Length: 252
Image (cartoon, rainbow, N blue to C red):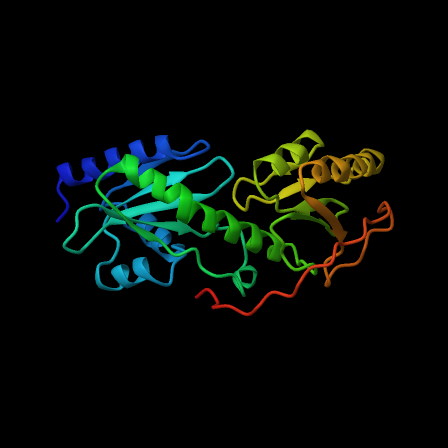
C-alpha cells in the first residue's frame, strides 16, 4: 500500500528535480487510484533494461511525470531494491507510429539517489542526452525520412498538403525554425511550415539554410518515399551525404 506520506515524498522529489533540470520542466503526480493513466503511462515507458525489469515484478502503482514544453516527458517511479531513491525513464510520444521507433535504440532509464539535486546532474548529462537524440531520430523516421538521421543535419520533408515538416536538433535549430514560421506539434514535437503562401515558404527555406549553417548545422530538403512532390514546391536543397545507420535493437 502507498500511504499519503510516501506519495508526498515522490511528488516533492519530482518538483525539485524538475526545477534543477536544464530548460523548463513541470511535474505532476499520478496517485495509485489513477489506474487508467498509470496503465497508459506504463505502456509508453521507453526502456528495455532496468525500468522494464522492475515493472515486470512491480507494476506501476504511482508515478511522477516531468514534462517539457516541446512534448518530451520523463517518468519517476519507485525503486524496489535495497537502495533509497527512485528510477527514472523516458516516455515515448503518443503521436508517433510504432514504425518510427524501428532501428532506434531505447534511451534506457537509470537509478537515482534520494538527493534530487545530485540526481538532476545525472539525468541532464546521461538520460536527457540519450533521450533527446532518440526523440530526434524517431521524429525524423515518422516523417518518412529517406536521409539517414544525422545529429548535425536538419532534414526538411515535404508533406502531401504542401507543408514542410522537420524534427529539429536542439534549441538553436528550433529557434531558427520558429523565427521563420514553423509551428511545433506539442504531442509529437515535429515542426511544420504551412504551404498556404508558397512565396513566404520559399523565402523561409532560402533563409533557414545559411542561418543553420552559421551554427554548424546542415540542411536537406526531401520528399518521403511514399508521397508525391507538390507541383508548387520551390527548388530543393541537395541532401548532404550521410553514412548508413548500423542495425540496433528494436523497440517493443
